[in-house]
Length: 508
Image (cartoon, rainbow, N blue to C red; front, side, top):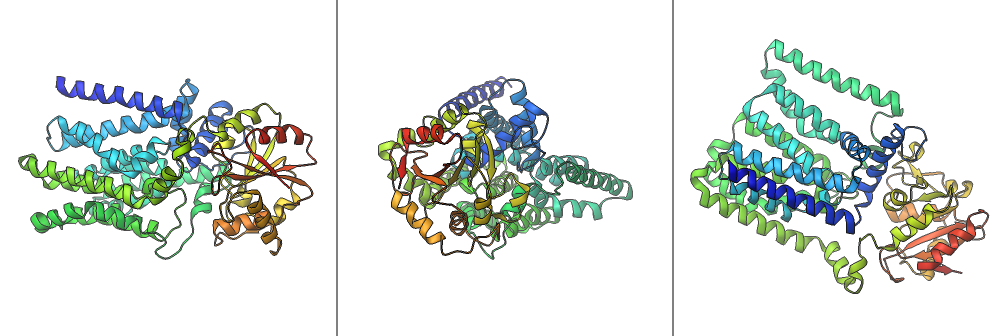
């Protein structure tokens, strides 16, 4: 008992240290920063809104996660620090649940905690997403399913869907199965929980005037077999899958195993594999593969086969680490291309934070941008996300060139690398956009480059000063900067231009 306490205290202290270091020196993920802004606005005003003291708008997909972070911010905790720490404490709980459920030795608390460092979604959690907390809830749901504990199934189903709407995918077959299996009294309990869910969506609609969070509309785009991230997860666990099939295939195909497989693996994978997954950092949408196969691994390899269990965990760690290094080419490319400037890469001394801090000093700046995370979060300025994550007008169709032409923002920021990011690239982008018919809204079928091109069609070269600004690097480099347009007619023009020129470059 004392050993368990020591392990958990050590891991807790380690988690606090990680949370402090990461939140102090590094930037959260772009989309995570959007939710942070919602959380802090809720704490400050009591209204769920992206821009402070405006109408309710929910661009925060993880509703309960937003509420939790808001409470921590209200009592004085830094939001980014809280997000990391809650995730890591969830991981400690998850490791302890595995140890207790399967009568493992105490050292497995440490093994499971460290094993997660090899999973890509772990790093998504470290930079602000709620994945480890959701993973904990999913584990508790699966354990309750195997135990046949209906009350726990309903409770964790409800909590999971409050955390993320798409948690519904994980609970669908499980709840259907137990509904038909249960007696009349238990069916009534299930229906009561369903009514709670209906009430929740009714209240959402009354408050936001939308049934689902705006990101649901923004990011739901169906393209057959759009991504193969799920295949990568299968490859990580392939040796374990083959071994389990070899020794336990005659035991695995029971009713509950099949129901869990359908609900936790097959249905979510069908949904995600055919969807455009924006901000799929570390394959975070496919986190459920890891927790499913770990549960099955511990379930069918008892403590009597500890040597095989250790070998299996070692294989998972090695395969997962290798897959991250080999498949995450974008990450590797970023590291290789930023060796000279690695000290400023995604850290809080990046130019984007300089820009945010300077914008704070100017009253009532109005910004329109294609990425509404880090810069708006750290600056606090009024922002319209042209892609639709915080504006109902553009949730189902993003903003187009006609909207830009008719609007009157102090500054417009376009993030793209289609034509490169130097001044001649900016000119090429504007020239190419002149060939387009300007639209007020753009269909989601258009890709990001087409979206930026359509927005550019509404930029009046005579009305806006044009600039290239390096968000993360100290230098103007290919594929590493942002196009900024400052309204010449704005009374804040000179102040804004002075700020941009301290780190950026003016284009003719």
